[in-house]
Image 1 (cartoon, rainbow over the protein chains, first blue to last red):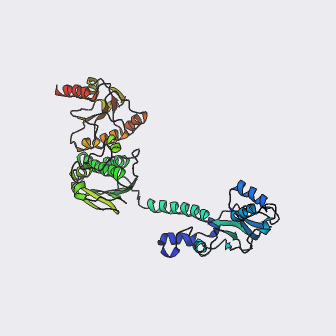
Image 2: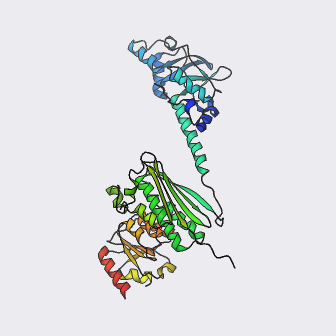
Image 3: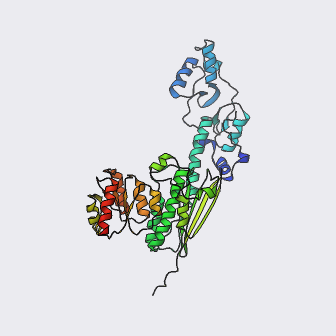
Length: 308
Length: 112
């Protein structure tokens, strides 16, 4: 079995960049647990229990002599040879990696060899760490989080309040009733600060709220993007799924798939989409089962009177 | 009718309000537990009478520009709700009256 089912050849570019950027020393477990050749298998057993590791490099004076794993320990237990030295059981033909290798090469090692861990050597051939599927996964997750956060932040373009155009994307989570409505509240407050006609604010806020609640109640999570300039206000609700099988049916007043729990919170009456359409000058919905739904609503702003 | 006086007719106790909003003129009441219904109404600054004690009651009221939220049936809104009311600048009150009785009292007061 391939412990890390990722092949660099088929990765998105962004991910590929990560695989080349990250070096072995970035992803290895550095606090290396080692054992000497003359230690007994009993010593190894204790060490594995205490440090909760399943493979231990055999190291003396930073020099790597081999590796012993839990399988070797089981064999020693099985054949009652627990008092024999580790050197009798260790694999001395160890595949190692260098600490400045890019992660992409190490990933291919996991596919090429049966081993689940590779000791790491530095340029002076000293054992400095060990790399496992777990250490890679942990670091990759952290890096991916960081990368995603960076990309997400690019969506938010902070603009001064009196700018002619403002834009913001809100992330909306599935079933997050605690935060549901916050985006609509913020949109309403923003429009008030911009001095938009209260009647239009009301329409936009209602549309935003209906779409936000739809994301919370029905979607697997998505985004609500708000954009306002001198001429119009636009809200786009976009989710990653599950999609609507029959859009015409979903647009019918009173038709709903909401459960009782949602209804007990005062929602799921089957009025969300029709009401969002009612309060907008333009309404557009596109949906595909399995793909997701995008709803766009637009309200036109009347031309402002030129300043005297 | 002034919000404060209107709330009095339903024996309401105010949980959060400021002076300016106490004196706001209120002419409409929406009585609903289904927030979807509230979002369908086109009334100017209505008082929302509800027995729903969740943040969503306040958020819905805020979105439609309600004058206040009155919680009926003797329910006590959790403290977080009063915090949110303050944050949204939306008066919040409660009454021990059942929702129907509260609606009747408010309706009679507005008829005068």
